Image (cartoon, rainbow, N blue to C red; front, side, top):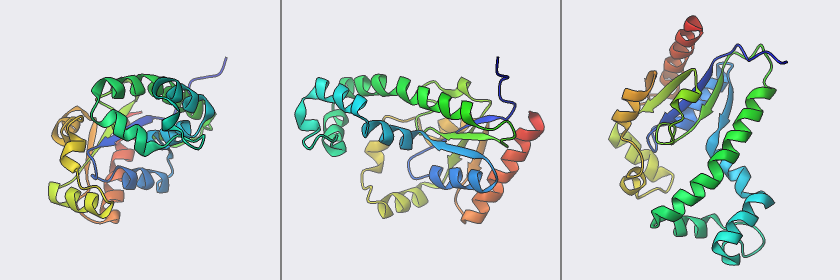
Length: 199
């Protein structure tokens, strides 16, 4: 029987445009192994298994060239909470499988394993991690970052999420991302050191 990993497993979350991807990159630069749940979802949406599942639910129009059209899927689920719930219930177990397989493959000397999960607390995944980190940022900075990424509907995107204040309350650690990338990395470094001390 294989021994359980001794390294800490950390869940990373935050509000839209708070800087989760930058924080994940900072963890990686500091020696942690990292995984993005969004990236796993994108992988799954490119798989035949998920394509067949979604075509069975919504018809061939969601995969006009044999590949899933994410914009069409987004249009279906955006205004239909029941369809979004179905999609999440279909994908979440597959994402969980992928995360578990990734974690099992990490070498025992891994410093930490960090998984970015935008809806970590909304999906009741907090207990799956040894510690959780919420990235928070000033609203003005988040609006500017979202605009730079072509996201104009920040408010509507946030309606199905907990507020960043609530995420911060629920998280084990909070890191602010109002300054430079170096400032963010310094904050992540302090958190990582705390987690290692507590392990």
